[in-house]
Length: 201
Ligand code: VGL
Ligand code: ZN
Image (tube, rainbow, N blue to C red; front, side, top):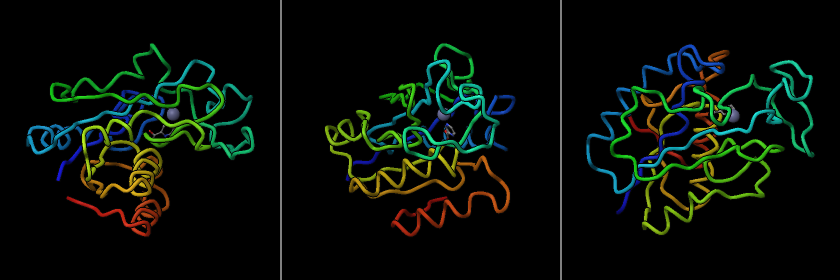
């Protein structure tokens, strides 16, 4: 069975000192590098949150406060600090992440008026990235997912992978939640378990 490793959004803005810092994010990088060194994956894919300046998921673009929820074209949209702006250092992959063995990069969140937590679909499920087609072309049946953040982009990527028919695993040691209160991504884990996602590590 062919396997892919999908590494979600290991970018400077989600790591230590970034504008949307995920607690302990940097701790997962050596673990992910070790996974890539195993040579057990047929494909290694990175996702990259990649917003245009002024993206509508930013509080600053809506005269909203960070943490508010607004209506964005009929969908509830959480208001984030500016992050992963195209061309900025914050959008780049963390320099400690070893990119040597990466086969493919999927950029998401590139359309101004819709956010994209999943690596497969935007949040309103209108626009699909090339990730599903890419995996099918390479006859991938099982995906292992790691990266940032457990409770947003990792969760939605895993739920969509499961929906799309892949056997889907998340590396517990290779991910961290952005919301550590009240209980550190546990709700996200339950949502994934309910859908049939399994956990490794
Ligand atoms: C993410 C919030 C906003 C993530 C991306 O990578 O989990 N979270 N954009
Ligand atoms: Zn984003």
